[in-house]
Length: 365
Ligand code: ADP
Ligand code: MG
Image (cartoon, rainbow, N blue to C red):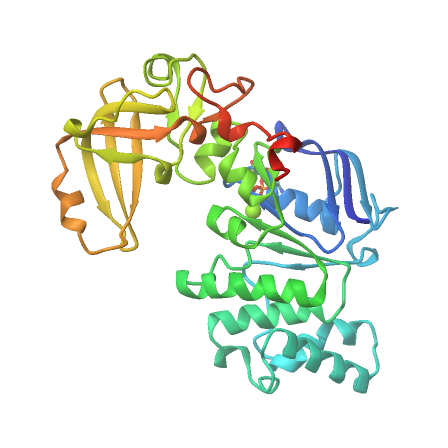
């Protein structure tokens, strides 16, 4: 796969603040790449550096294999879509979409055809004559997208473009954006602080923390194999076991994460037989949170940590879970679902069979 964007040793300092700190990153052609991280972690600054709105303190930026460091924004084959869309209220939808082409002096008929094509791509055929105030939030966002796509850039940079939309519309637009990206085949670099959004849309995700990439992985890897407690806590609900709790429950020093949906909650009388394949922890249900599709129970372990247990509400017997508030329970999970963090990659004792790559002989019938 050819590389769309290469960042080498990229830094941007504002006084004492290292907004971007010695970043190395390659983004492939046609990739849907997300930068995920808390507010202030440097995501927008990276986008602005790529777009050329900001000049780096150190390092190099290549687009399509060409060094563009120091070049102005208009000399880079990228377009940016911002959260506030910045569409012109006094222009029609079509005029908004054509704007970039007019600036580039593309002939009128050509402009028209490309604008109509871009509007069709974002499923806004027939909306060309409307004014922005006659559109919904989601439609305005799509106009902003069409306005960027009409330039046919190699790379589209999107900075929290769905942030202003309500949850339902945001989820719908996530799916649509992903489809549009597949259709047009342009490299998307998508910035968000919303982990669910990043998981939904991305081929790969870079998790940012204080100007650095904490982990770079596919959505599945990020969720199932977080590399640090920061990532585990930022992507999904992290159930962290460390120190004395890890010794007591896992039988090892070190840090471990177990995801809420991997944990079962039993009555103390239903303790499973000791088999070395499971971790068992005693605790008290502090809170039960009904979320519609699922119920979350927050359990204080006798050993010291607090774990969240997720239960899919596949039937309507939710009352049993609600009645457990304040009661003693047993939490049970397979050792295979324990994720070791930061350096200690062995899950001790019992079994690690689920993680061992199987030998070729085992796969031959
Ligand atoms: P994010 O987009 O992840 O929220 P930003 O890239 O906007 O983060 O900001 C990263 C850090 O750089 C923050 O600490 C922010 O305050 C600082 N920063 C960003 N832009 C400027 C600027 N123009 N001047 C001074 N500090 C800035
Ligand atoms: Mg930002």
